[in-house]
Image (cartoon, rainbow, N blue to C red):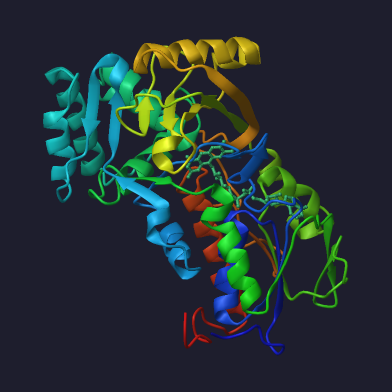
Length: 447
Ligand SMILES: Cc1cc2nc3c(=O)[nH]c(=O)nc-3n(C[C@H](O)[C@H](O)[C@H](O)COP(=O)(O)OP(=O)(O)OC[C@H]3O[C@@H](n4cnc5c(N)ncnc54)[C@H](O)[C@@H]3O)c2cc1C
């Protein structure tokens, strides 16, 4: 093991979400001295634990994919054991519609082809239409030159109503958190390329068996502390100022001088930090132009177990989109999470009416429900940026030489996900190391 050295550049990371910790670990592995500032008491940002009435819940149920290569690498690096992720083949199961598409455990493209052949509840016209879209994307190497809404791509390739309703729309909303009528076909094609079309293991569903803070931010924080780096919670930074060829931060209790600063906050929190730096005015404007989409998670605790055929099942025709049996994922018996991604008609009814509707929808799928003991609706109003066609996004590198951006909104190819957040953090960390003549991993004898 190797420790932070005092002859290497001090770097500040602002934000203790997945992007911030990916940047901090990367920098530490290259020998930079890292101080990470997190405004909240809890680590994880938009993927964090919430303690409520004795329940340890996530702010929103998250799904990871086998294709999240950088996230999985980071988990390994900070010592997270593989068992914390429940891994199973991609399965889109709608018990309420007797419809199920399950990827076969075969190499690509057979996993999908065989899965499609065996799919239940889809007619031949549906299966042929799905194969047509995948073939067309493959022919074009998953490049969508003229970006347009996903709905337009689906219409051009003659996707059936059932496929749109049960496969494409739910996948698009789950991955891009934007409805197909407004979602970018280019980004959606990238997601399909790296998941469905990439092979059985890339399309696997990975469902956390621990809370989202415990999955990566907390072990990463421990890993950094053990190597002499600093992680400060409840320490909000207000602004970044250029000074003596480096930077000082408003809100830093030590008023330290940093050679580089990684801004790893959500985009809407980044703009005020960057404003004092005139060179960053165009970046601030770009960030200001991003629009955001909500995600609602209804946590329902029942007085007994429920009869889920899979830990994750699709819901259709109502407000709910996916239901998760948390008991099958290491949670307490009877705990269910129902997710509603993106804006939609659920925003037009009261919380109470929404909860009643979700209970009825759940009962229609899994049968009579045990008594409801407790419930909590968590709405993240700005869960992710709206991933619309032709969006201009800021990049990791900025016009200010020592200020870098990390976060789920800076990767031009991907929607806002844990993986894009981690990738951006790794990329910011590596760019700084390169600028300083350091290399990731070079200081470490034992990992
Ligand atoms: C309900 C919900 C469900 C989701 N589902 C999925 C899913 O299934 N799969 C998936 O891959 N992704 C999902 N996402 C998206 C994923 O959670 C985000 O893309 C990812 O967590 C973003 O990480 P980040 O590090 O870029 O930003 P954040 O998580 O927002 O982290 C930024 C951190 O910066 C801190 N901060 C802000 N301002 C300051 C300041 N001035 N000083 C110090 N600290 C500051 C914040 O407190 C926060 O901790 C979901 C998101 C939500 C909200």
